Amino acid sequence: MSTNKPRKEPFQSPKGMHDIMGDVYYAYQGLFEKAQEVAVYYGFKPIAIPIVEQQELFETTIGIGTDIVDKEMYTLKTKGGDQLALRPEFTAGVMRAYIEHGMQSETQPIMLYSSGPLFRHDKPQRGRYRQFHQFNLEVLGTKKSIADALVIKTAVVIIEEAGAKNLIVDINSIGDKESRTNYLRELTTYYKKHINQMPAEARERLKTNPLRLLDSKDPKMIAINIDAPESVAFLNPESKKHLKEVLEYLDEMNIVYRLNKNLVRGLSYYTHTVFEIFDESDSEVGPLSLGGGGRYDYLGTMLGSKKEIPAIGMAFGMDRIIESPWYTNLAPKINKKPKCYFIQLGFDAKLKALPIIDILRKGHIPVLQSLTKDSLTSQLATAERSGVPYTLIFGQKEALENSVIVRDMVNHSQKTVKIDKLVEYIKEMK
Image (tube, rainbow, N blue to C red; front, side, top):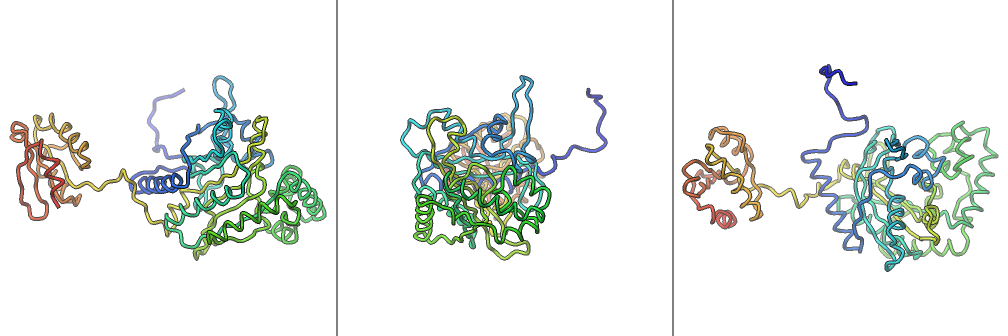
Protein backbone atom coordinates (compact mmCIF):
# COMPACT_ATOMS: atom_id res chain seq x y z
CA MET A 1 0.00 0.00 0.00
CA SER A 2 1.43 3.37 -1.00
CA THR A 3 2.32 5.86 1.72
CA ASN A 4 2.63 8.70 -0.83
CA LYS A 5 5.90 9.74 0.80
CA PRO A 6 8.54 11.12 -1.58
CA ARG A 7 11.45 8.79 -2.33
CA LYS A 8 14.88 9.66 -1.03
CA GLU A 9 16.40 8.58 -4.36
CA PRO A 10 14.89 8.84 -7.88
CA PHE A 11 13.88 5.66 -9.69
CA GLN A 12 16.32 4.14 -12.18
CA SER A 13 15.77 1.71 -15.06
CA PRO A 14 16.01 -1.99 -14.07
CA LYS A 15 19.44 -3.60 -14.12
CA GLY A 16 20.42 -4.70 -17.62
CA MET A 17 17.81 -2.45 -19.26
CA HIS A 18 18.33 1.07 -20.54
CA ASP A 19 16.54 4.01 -22.07
CA ILE A 20 17.06 4.63 -25.79
CA MET A 21 16.84 8.26 -26.85
CA GLY A 22 18.39 11.04 -28.90
CA ASP A 23 20.95 10.00 -31.50
CA VAL A 24 21.01 6.43 -30.17
CA TYR A 25 17.28 6.10 -30.88
CA TYR A 26 17.89 7.20 -34.46
CA ALA A 27 20.76 4.72 -34.70
CA TYR A 28 18.35 1.88 -33.89
CA GLN A 29 15.77 3.30 -36.28
CA GLY A 30 18.34 3.59 -39.07
CA LEU A 31 19.56 0.04 -38.60
CA PHE A 32 16.00 -1.29 -38.59
CA GLU A 33 15.17 0.57 -41.80
CA LYS A 34 18.30 -0.81 -43.50
CA ALA A 35 17.54 -4.35 -42.32
CA GLN A 36 13.93 -4.02 -43.43
CA GLU A 37 14.98 -2.69 -46.83
CA VAL A 38 17.40 -5.57 -47.48
CA ALA A 39 14.92 -8.17 -46.20
CA VAL A 40 12.20 -6.87 -48.52
CA TYR A 41 14.56 -7.04 -51.52
CA TYR A 42 15.20 -10.71 -50.74
CA GLY A 43 11.47 -11.44 -50.49
CA PHE A 44 10.68 -11.28 -46.77
CA LYS A 45 7.43 -9.83 -45.42
CA PRO A 46 6.79 -8.30 -41.98
CA ILE A 47 5.18 -9.87 -38.94
CA ALA A 48 4.79 -8.50 -35.42
CA ILE A 49 4.15 -11.01 -32.64
CA PRO A 50 3.26 -10.36 -28.97
CA ILE A 51 5.98 -9.53 -26.47
CA VAL A 52 4.44 -12.14 -24.15
CA GLU A 53 3.48 -15.72 -24.97
CA GLN A 54 2.34 -18.71 -22.95
CA GLN A 55 5.23 -19.88 -20.80
CA GLU A 56 4.70 -23.45 -22.00
CA LEU A 57 5.45 -22.36 -25.59
CA PHE A 58 9.08 -21.69 -24.72
CA GLU A 59 9.40 -24.62 -22.32
CA THR A 60 8.22 -26.90 -25.14
CA THR A 61 10.35 -25.45 -27.92
CA ILE A 62 13.52 -24.13 -26.31
CA GLY A 63 13.53 -27.02 -23.88
CA ILE A 64 14.05 -27.81 -20.24
CA GLY A 65 17.77 -28.03 -19.51
CA THR A 66 18.65 -24.85 -21.39
CA ASP A 67 19.90 -21.76 -19.59
CA ILE A 68 17.14 -19.70 -21.19
CA VAL A 69 14.31 -21.75 -19.69
CA ASP A 70 16.03 -22.81 -16.48
CA LYS A 71 17.63 -19.50 -15.50
CA GLU A 72 16.89 -16.57 -17.80
CA MET A 73 13.21 -16.46 -18.72
CA TYR A 74 11.02 -13.72 -17.24
CA THR A 75 7.69 -15.26 -16.24
CA LEU A 76 4.48 -13.86 -14.79
CA LYS A 77 1.09 -15.06 -13.68
CA THR A 78 -1.88 -12.94 -14.73
CA LYS A 79 -4.87 -12.15 -12.51
CA GLY A 80 -6.80 -14.67 -14.59
CA GLY A 81 -4.28 -17.39 -13.77
CA ASP A 82 -2.49 -17.53 -17.14
CA GLN A 83 1.21 -18.37 -16.91
CA LEU A 84 3.01 -16.14 -19.41
CA ALA A 85 6.61 -15.35 -20.28
CA LEU A 86 8.29 -12.36 -21.86
CA ARG A 87 9.64 -13.61 -25.17
CA PRO A 88 13.33 -14.62 -24.96
CA GLU A 89 13.50 -15.22 -28.74
CA PHE A 90 11.35 -14.86 -31.86
CA THR A 91 11.23 -18.24 -33.60
CA ALA A 92 8.78 -20.08 -31.33
CA GLY A 93 6.30 -17.20 -31.52
CA VAL A 94 6.62 -16.93 -35.30
CA MET A 95 6.00 -20.67 -35.71
CA ARG A 96 3.03 -20.42 -33.35
CA ALA A 97 1.61 -17.62 -35.51
CA TYR A 98 2.29 -19.60 -38.71
CA ILE A 99 0.23 -22.53 -37.40
CA GLU A 100 -2.46 -20.45 -35.69
CA HIS A 101 -3.23 -18.41 -38.81
CA GLY A 102 -3.21 -21.33 -41.23
CA MET A 103 -0.23 -20.17 -43.25
CA GLN A 104 0.31 -23.80 -44.31
CA SER A 105 -2.47 -23.30 -46.86
CA GLU A 106 -0.65 -20.41 -48.54
CA THR A 107 2.01 -20.70 -51.22
CA GLN A 108 5.18 -22.00 -49.58
CA PRO A 109 7.65 -21.00 -48.35
CA ILE A 110 6.50 -18.18 -46.07
CA MET A 111 9.31 -15.66 -45.57
CA LEU A 112 8.96 -13.33 -42.58
CA TYR A 113 10.99 -10.69 -40.78
CA SER A 114 10.37 -9.20 -37.35
CA SER A 115 12.09 -6.91 -34.91
CA GLY A 116 11.79 -5.67 -31.36
CA PRO A 117 12.76 -6.21 -27.73
CA LEU A 118 13.49 -9.60 -26.16
CA PHE A 119 14.10 -10.44 -22.51
CA ARG A 120 16.55 -12.73 -20.72
CA HIS A 121 17.65 -12.52 -17.08
CA ASP A 122 21.29 -12.86 -18.06
CA LYS A 123 24.42 -11.29 -16.60
CA PRO A 124 24.74 -7.85 -18.26
CA GLN A 125 28.02 -7.59 -20.18
CA ARG A 126 29.51 -6.36 -23.44
CA GLY A 127 26.67 -6.00 -25.94
CA ARG A 128 24.34 -8.13 -23.80
CA TYR A 129 21.37 -6.72 -21.95
CA ARG A 130 18.39 -8.15 -20.11
CA GLN A 131 16.17 -6.26 -22.50
CA PHE A 132 17.84 -6.45 -25.88
CA HIS A 133 16.81 -5.88 -29.48
CA GLN A 134 17.04 -8.23 -32.43
CA PHE A 135 16.16 -8.34 -36.11
CA ASN A 136 14.77 -11.73 -37.06
CA LEU A 137 14.43 -13.67 -40.34
CA GLU A 138 12.42 -16.87 -40.85
CA VAL A 139 11.71 -19.04 -43.92
CA LEU A 140 8.97 -21.57 -43.17
CA GLY A 141 7.66 -24.39 -45.34
CA THR A 142 10.69 -25.66 -47.27
CA LYS A 143 13.47 -28.24 -46.78
CA LYS A 144 15.58 -26.82 -49.59
CA SER A 145 19.16 -26.01 -48.68
CA ILE A 146 18.99 -22.80 -50.70
CA ALA A 147 16.68 -21.40 -48.00
CA ASP A 148 19.50 -21.83 -45.46
CA ALA A 149 21.85 -19.95 -47.77
CA LEU A 150 19.25 -17.26 -48.39
CA VAL A 151 18.85 -16.52 -44.67
CA ILE A 152 22.62 -16.41 -44.11
CA LYS A 153 23.16 -14.20 -47.16
CA THR A 154 20.42 -11.74 -46.15
CA ALA A 155 21.84 -11.40 -42.64
CA VAL A 156 25.41 -10.95 -43.87
CA VAL A 157 24.34 -8.26 -46.35
CA ILE A 158 22.46 -6.33 -43.64
CA ILE A 159 25.38 -6.44 -41.21
CA GLU A 160 27.92 -5.51 -43.91
CA GLU A 161 25.80 -2.56 -45.04
CA ALA A 162 25.75 -1.47 -41.40
CA GLY A 163 29.53 -1.17 -41.63
CA ALA A 164 31.07 -4.58 -40.80
CA LYS A 165 34.18 -5.46 -42.81
CA ASN A 166 35.45 -8.69 -41.22
CA LEU A 167 32.55 -11.11 -40.93
CA ILE A 168 32.93 -14.86 -40.76
CA VAL A 169 30.19 -17.49 -40.47
CA ASP A 170 30.78 -20.43 -38.15
CA ILE A 171 28.70 -23.33 -39.42
CA ASN A 172 27.94 -26.90 -38.44
CA SER A 173 25.29 -29.57 -38.92
CA ILE A 174 23.65 -31.69 -36.26
CA GLY A 175 21.67 -33.61 -38.86
CA ASP A 176 18.14 -34.95 -38.86
CA LYS A 177 16.49 -37.09 -36.17
CA GLU A 178 18.35 -40.25 -37.19
CA SER A 179 21.75 -38.55 -37.29
CA ARG A 180 21.17 -36.64 -34.10
CA THR A 181 20.03 -39.72 -32.16
CA ASN A 182 23.18 -41.63 -33.09
CA TYR A 183 25.36 -38.64 -32.33
CA LEU A 184 23.78 -37.96 -28.95
CA ARG A 185 24.29 -41.59 -27.97
CA GLU A 186 28.00 -41.43 -28.82
CA LEU A 187 28.42 -37.98 -27.26
CA THR A 188 26.79 -39.09 -23.99
CA THR A 189 29.02 -42.15 -23.85
CA TYR A 190 32.07 -39.94 -24.34
CA TYR A 191 31.09 -37.55 -21.54
CA LYS A 192 30.36 -40.40 -19.14
CA LYS A 193 33.97 -41.54 -19.57
CA HIS A 194 35.04 -38.08 -18.32
CA ILE A 195 32.32 -37.63 -15.70
CA ASN A 196 34.80 -37.35 -12.83
CA GLN A 197 36.57 -34.41 -14.48
CA MET A 198 33.35 -32.54 -15.27
CA PRO A 199 32.04 -29.71 -13.05
CA ALA A 200 28.81 -30.35 -11.13
CA GLU A 201 26.68 -28.16 -13.40
CA ALA A 202 27.94 -30.00 -16.49
CA ARG A 203 27.10 -33.37 -14.93
CA GLU A 204 23.53 -32.16 -14.40
CA ARG A 205 23.34 -30.77 -17.92
CA LEU A 206 24.46 -34.14 -19.30
CA LYS A 207 21.20 -35.63 -18.05
CA THR A 208 18.99 -33.15 -19.88
CA ASN A 209 20.84 -31.54 -22.79
CA PRO A 210 24.29 -32.97 -23.58
CA LEU A 211 24.63 -30.92 -26.76
CA ARG A 212 24.87 -27.76 -24.68
CA LEU A 213 28.10 -29.04 -23.15
CA LEU A 214 29.88 -28.59 -26.46
CA ASP A 215 29.94 -24.79 -26.29
CA SER A 216 30.58 -24.59 -22.55
CA LYS A 217 32.92 -21.77 -21.50
CA ASP A 218 34.14 -23.68 -18.44
CA PRO A 219 37.91 -24.38 -18.81
CA LYS A 220 37.44 -28.01 -17.72
CA MET A 221 34.78 -28.61 -20.36
CA ILE A 222 36.81 -26.83 -23.05
CA ALA A 223 39.64 -29.29 -22.43
CA ILE A 224 37.27 -32.28 -22.51
CA ASN A 225 35.55 -31.05 -25.68
CA ILE A 226 38.79 -31.05 -27.68
CA ASP A 227 38.41 -34.78 -28.35
CA ALA A 228 34.61 -34.94 -28.26
CA PRO A 229 32.88 -36.74 -31.16
CA GLU A 230 32.02 -34.49 -34.11
CA SER A 231 28.40 -34.32 -35.26
CA VAL A 232 29.37 -34.28 -38.94
CA ALA A 233 30.85 -37.78 -38.54
CA PHE A 234 27.36 -39.10 -37.74
CA LEU A 235 25.44 -37.45 -40.56
CA ASN A 236 23.43 -39.80 -42.76
CA PRO A 237 23.61 -39.36 -46.56
CA GLU A 238 20.66 -36.95 -46.70
CA SER A 239 22.11 -34.73 -43.95
CA LYS A 240 25.55 -34.77 -45.58
CA LYS A 241 24.01 -33.74 -48.89
CA HIS A 242 22.14 -30.88 -47.23
CA LEU A 243 25.29 -29.51 -45.54
CA LYS A 244 27.34 -29.91 -48.74
CA GLU A 245 24.78 -27.90 -50.72
CA VAL A 246 24.66 -25.11 -48.13
CA LEU A 247 28.45 -24.80 -48.22
CA GLU A 248 28.44 -24.74 -52.02
CA TYR A 249 25.96 -21.85 -51.96
CA LEU A 250 28.16 -19.96 -49.49
CA ASP A 251 31.20 -20.57 -51.70
CA GLU A 252 29.33 -19.28 -54.73
CA MET A 253 28.38 -16.09 -52.85
CA ASN A 254 31.95 -15.62 -51.53
CA ILE A 255 30.76 -15.74 -47.92
CA VAL A 256 33.66 -16.53 -45.61
CA TYR A 257 32.89 -19.48 -43.31
CA ARG A 258 34.54 -22.14 -41.19
CA LEU A 259 33.27 -25.50 -39.98
CA ASN A 260 32.96 -25.49 -36.19
CA LYS A 261 32.41 -28.97 -34.74
CA ASN A 262 31.40 -27.57 -31.33
CA LEU A 263 28.74 -25.23 -32.66
CA VAL A 264 25.28 -26.40 -31.61
CA ARG A 265 23.49 -23.12 -30.72
CA GLY A 266 21.55 -22.80 -27.49
CA LEU A 267 18.08 -24.03 -28.39
CA SER A 268 16.79 -27.60 -28.38
CA TYR A 269 14.76 -27.39 -31.58
CA TYR A 270 17.61 -27.06 -34.07
CA THR A 271 18.29 -29.69 -36.76
CA HIS A 272 20.67 -29.82 -39.73
CA THR A 273 22.30 -26.41 -40.28
CA VAL A 274 23.38 -24.30 -37.32
CA PHE A 275 25.44 -21.15 -37.76
CA GLU A 276 26.74 -18.06 -36.02
CA ILE A 277 28.02 -14.79 -37.51
CA PHE A 278 31.13 -13.25 -35.95
CA ASP A 279 32.86 -9.92 -36.28
CA GLU A 280 36.56 -10.77 -36.58
CA SER A 281 37.82 -7.20 -36.18
CA ASP A 282 40.85 -6.72 -33.94
CA SER A 283 39.67 -6.64 -30.34
CA GLU A 284 41.18 -7.11 -26.93
CA VAL A 285 38.28 -9.33 -25.93
CA GLY A 286 38.19 -11.43 -29.09
CA PRO A 287 35.61 -12.01 -31.85
CA LEU A 288 32.09 -10.76 -31.18
CA SER A 289 29.07 -12.89 -31.98
CA LEU A 290 26.54 -10.69 -33.81
CA GLY A 291 23.84 -13.27 -34.44
CA GLY A 292 23.04 -16.79 -35.51
CA GLY A 293 20.40 -19.37 -36.14
CA GLY A 294 19.66 -22.67 -37.77
CA ARG A 295 17.18 -25.07 -39.28
CA TYR A 296 14.28 -26.36 -37.16
CA ASP A 297 12.32 -28.88 -39.23
CA TYR A 298 10.53 -30.50 -36.27
CA LEU A 299 9.46 -27.40 -34.35
CA GLY A 300 6.02 -27.36 -35.98
CA THR A 301 5.08 -30.82 -34.72
CA MET A 302 6.35 -29.86 -31.26
CA LEU A 303 3.70 -27.10 -31.30
CA GLY A 304 0.87 -29.35 -32.42
CA SER A 305 1.06 -29.32 -36.21
CA LYS A 306 -0.04 -32.64 -37.74
CA LYS A 307 2.57 -32.26 -40.48
CA GLU A 308 6.21 -31.34 -40.22
CA ILE A 309 6.97 -27.73 -41.12
CA PRO A 310 10.58 -27.54 -42.34
CA ALA A 311 12.03 -24.11 -41.61
CA ILE A 312 15.19 -22.06 -41.18
CA GLY A 313 15.70 -18.84 -39.23
CA MET A 314 18.19 -16.49 -37.62
CA ALA A 315 18.42 -13.29 -35.59
CA PHE A 316 21.13 -10.71 -35.08
CA GLY A 317 21.64 -8.40 -32.13
CA MET A 318 20.92 -4.77 -32.97
CA ASP A 319 22.51 -3.57 -29.71
CA ARG A 320 25.83 -5.22 -30.55
CA ILE A 321 25.93 -3.79 -34.06
CA ILE A 322 25.10 -0.26 -32.92
CA GLU A 323 27.74 -0.40 -30.18
CA SER A 324 30.43 -1.68 -32.57
CA PRO A 325 33.09 0.87 -33.59
CA TRP A 326 32.49 0.13 -37.28
CA TYR A 327 28.75 0.90 -37.22
CA THR A 328 28.12 3.53 -39.92
CA ASN A 329 25.33 5.26 -37.99
CA LEU A 330 22.70 4.71 -40.67
CA ALA A 331 20.40 7.71 -40.90
CA PRO A 332 16.70 6.89 -40.63
CA LYS A 333 14.27 8.46 -43.07
CA ILE A 334 12.30 10.00 -40.19
CA ASN A 335 15.33 11.96 -38.99
CA LYS A 336 15.29 14.78 -41.53
CA LYS A 337 17.57 17.70 -40.77
CA PRO A 338 15.45 20.80 -40.12
CA LYS A 339 16.05 23.69 -42.48
CA CYS A 340 14.18 26.33 -40.50
CA TYR A 341 13.61 27.54 -36.95
CA PHE A 342 10.07 28.82 -36.35
CA ILE A 343 9.78 31.81 -34.02
CA GLN A 344 6.43 33.26 -32.91
CA LEU A 345 5.71 36.42 -30.93
CA GLY A 346 2.49 37.20 -29.08
CA PHE A 347 -0.78 35.36 -28.48
CA ASP A 348 -2.31 36.10 -31.89
CA ALA A 349 0.76 34.54 -33.51
CA LYS A 350 0.62 31.54 -31.21
CA LEU A 351 -2.99 30.91 -32.27
CA LYS A 352 -1.91 30.50 -35.88
CA ALA A 353 1.49 28.91 -35.20
CA LEU A 354 0.43 25.24 -35.21
CA PRO A 355 -1.56 25.58 -38.47
CA ILE A 356 1.55 27.07 -40.11
CA ILE A 357 3.73 24.21 -38.83
CA ASP A 358 1.14 21.80 -40.24
CA ILE A 359 1.36 23.54 -43.63
CA LEU A 360 5.13 23.02 -43.52
CA ARG A 361 4.66 19.37 -42.49
CA LYS A 362 2.39 18.73 -45.47
CA GLY A 363 5.07 20.32 -47.62
CA HIS A 364 7.65 17.90 -46.11
CA ILE A 365 9.61 20.67 -44.40
CA PRO A 366 10.62 19.75 -40.84
CA VAL A 367 11.22 22.66 -38.48
CA LEU A 368 12.58 23.35 -35.05
CA GLN A 369 10.41 25.53 -32.82
CA SER A 370 10.02 26.99 -29.33
CA LEU A 371 6.29 27.59 -29.11
CA THR A 372 6.44 27.80 -25.33
CA LYS A 373 8.82 30.80 -25.45
CA ASP A 374 7.84 34.47 -25.81
CA SER A 375 11.06 36.48 -26.09
CA LEU A 376 12.42 37.23 -29.56
CA THR A 377 15.96 37.47 -28.18
CA SER A 378 15.93 34.06 -26.51
CA GLN A 379 14.30 32.41 -29.52
CA LEU A 380 16.84 33.94 -31.93
CA ALA A 381 19.67 32.80 -29.67
CA THR A 382 18.28 29.25 -29.70
CA ALA A 383 17.95 29.43 -33.49
CA GLU A 384 21.60 30.51 -33.77
CA ARG A 385 22.75 27.58 -31.62
CA SER A 386 20.70 25.10 -33.64
CA GLY A 387 22.68 25.87 -36.78
CA VAL A 388 19.68 26.04 -39.14
CA PRO A 389 20.20 28.21 -42.25
CA TYR A 390 16.86 30.06 -41.99
CA THR A 391 14.57 31.40 -39.29
CA LEU A 392 10.83 32.03 -39.70
CA ILE A 393 9.57 34.95 -37.62
CA PHE A 394 5.82 35.17 -37.06
CA GLY A 395 4.51 38.05 -34.95
CA GLN A 396 1.30 40.04 -34.37
CA LYS A 397 1.69 42.04 -37.60
CA GLU A 398 2.41 38.90 -39.65
CA ALA A 399 -0.59 37.15 -38.10
CA LEU A 400 -2.87 39.95 -39.32
CA GLU A 401 -1.31 39.99 -42.80
CA ASN A 402 -1.06 36.17 -43.19
CA SER A 403 2.66 36.41 -43.81
CA VAL A 404 5.95 35.19 -42.32
CA ILE A 405 9.38 36.84 -42.17
CA VAL A 406 12.08 34.53 -43.53
CA ARG A 407 15.55 35.44 -42.21
CA ASP A 408 18.82 34.17 -43.66
CA MET A 409 20.91 33.25 -40.60
CA VAL A 410 24.19 33.67 -42.49
CA ASN A 411 23.89 37.20 -43.91
CA HIS A 412 20.89 38.25 -41.75
CA SER A 413 18.90 39.42 -44.76
CA GLN A 414 15.17 38.80 -44.54
CA LYS A 415 12.05 38.78 -46.68
CA THR A 416 8.33 38.76 -45.93
CA VAL A 417 6.49 35.87 -47.60
CA LYS A 418 2.77 35.14 -47.72
CA ILE A 419 1.79 31.97 -45.85
CA ASP A 420 0.29 30.35 -48.96
CA LYS A 421 3.63 30.83 -50.75
CA LEU A 422 5.84 29.80 -47.81
CA VAL A 423 6.42 26.15 -48.73
CA GLU A 424 7.26 27.02 -52.32
CA TYR A 425 9.65 29.80 -51.22
CA ILE A 426 11.52 27.61 -48.71
CA LYS A 427 11.95 24.80 -51.22
CA GLU A 428 13.46 27.26 -53.71
CA MET A 429 16.04 28.48 -51.19
CA LYS A 430 19.48 26.89 -51.47
